[in-house]
Length: 376
Ligand SMILES: Cc1cc2nc3c(=O)[nH]c(=O)nc-3n(C[C@H](O)[C@H](O)[C@H](O)COP(=O)(O)OP(=O)(O)OC[C@H]3O[C@@H](n4cnc5c(N)ncnc54)[C@H](O)[C@@H]3O)c2cc1C
Image 1 (cartoon, rainbow, N blue to C red):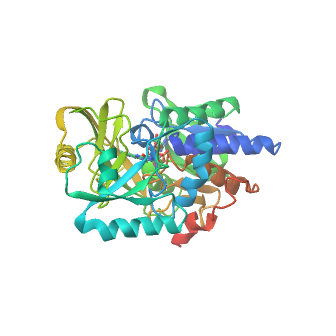
Image 2 (image 1 turned 90 degrees about the vertical axis):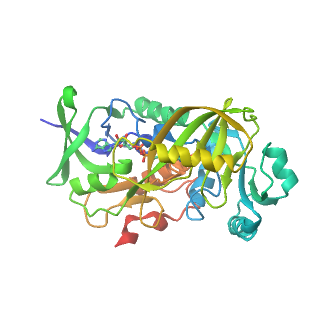
């Protein structure tokens, strides 16, 4: 006989962990503590995209539609000690000046702290910057995020509030039994299991569409795009004050990580839901692009990895009940901003799911922008 709960959440990356913690917190504040089961296919939560991020919070990242979520999350992340100052420099060559200026104007218009920098100001921030890079948009508020700390915070809150975390539980079956879902999973050597739940939350990252299909819902076209990161040892070692440095044409970014450099070619290669691995070509492309930006010598490629950033067709996240399939709630399409938006996104989604009132963090957010019915 399958255990019965109120809410089953598929996926325990940052999305699943954060929404589970928020639902548990809000429902217990309302005096109706929800029984929640968090189902994760892997041995440990965070194995997929959450564990592979570049770990930054940047106001402009994801565009103006994501900006309100980023801004609503920032103060909470800072107050809880998950951010440390970094600064971001979006750089261009002479031909890119109009683009850099338009970038500044676009984000200044929505309230971002952003301004143009002179070549001298750029050099002071990025030693060894090649002379052709002459214009930049500076975002002083950009910060590094303690991703593992944030994920663990939500998982710890889940534990404290009685959420059951079931790892090695790849959901392979979802059926309606009256007004309830019945979810069956296969954990390989860990055996099979099942749970009955009134609501099903789809927080399956790159697997969001396959999980929706399993639940008999129409997939929304959430596409996994692969992104590569390499860790380099350089001479000179990057200064600890080096900002996150991004090409205005979205073809590279790098930032320091201790005495090492994390570098990405800013790739977005269409992929399939899987344990993504880096391609040599993307590693080589990243290095070739970086060599055009700074005159540092690369001593070693120490690590390389890739992860899947999953986007809905309009590149905005999807939070809300499925318009057609009763009892199915989407929390997916976190793209390249799922860590930096997690606090406000999870709070908003939990309030929508529980029909709970908004609070100061979520009051400025327009839920309709992120609702799945925008694709109907
Ligand atoms: C290289 C890279 C750099 C990034 N940099 C940043 C950054 O600087 N800042 C930022 O905010 N974001 C960044 N991101 C994006 C961020 O990492 C993602 O938005 C976020 O991690 C998505 O979280 P998630 O929980 O939706 O997905 P995941 O972490 O992938 O979690 C989904 C989980 O669902 C589980 N699952 C899937 N199907 C099933 C099933 N049937 N049954 C049970 N479990 C299932 C999977 O095993 C997985 O653990 C980056 C991403 C990449 C790849």
